[in-house]
Image (cartoon, rainbow, N blue to C red; front, side):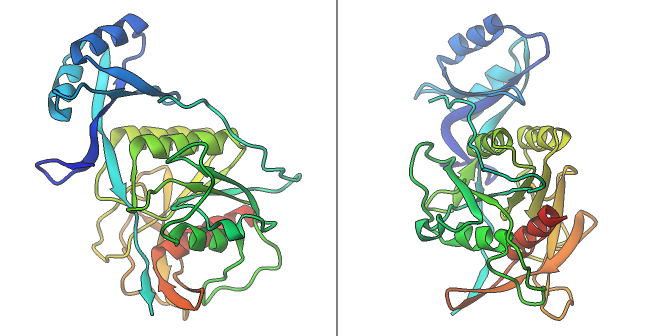
Length: 305
């Protein structure tokens, strides 16, 4: 990961390129020759190429060349995003999915987070796992955050101030964050593709960044237009300013409540926040506060309707 002059973090030696409608493979090949680059992943939809650059070319230089190239609509770095923490108190990949064995009327929630502790993988409500950071790897959760959010979405953990549920919700737990709590545009798009191909209709994203990405917004919009309902944490700093993906119009931003139903003092707010939900939960003997809890709870409730 590299930090640019403006503080934006991105993956070293990679750019994301989108071509205009009507462009051809010849347009792509001409650009690759200019960049001395290699396509390492095609994300289609929404029709974006992830290109590996030669070692002598910077991301900034490559984007200038790409943006000036005939047929290119736009380019971006392969942006890196940090997950939202909760306040604790003491190569190309194939378009694949998986069978979640959903019964008629069942609706699954895909949780994009740091993964799942394998000891919970055999729970009846965990219908599948996938590592979008390292496809093919066994599921894990180096941070523990994904395990918490998956269990909240499934109804195994009930936030304080919420009514306990009688039945669980099927969950697909997707690891999208590495052991340092970082993810990237290509990983998130890969996760969306996998969830869609697995028949998932609801996605929870308990993370956020101030960095706005046209490509990420396009991917979220495409998912929403094709039947997915997307939920994301509004943020744990009450700035009143949107974070992303919660700030995209195709995503429902979820703020946090105290157990008594009042707004949690550290919850973000503003016109972009559409829903508020309980934000306090107990897990493994620790108490956690965060909109990261409110969001999967809301997603789980939506799956029950």
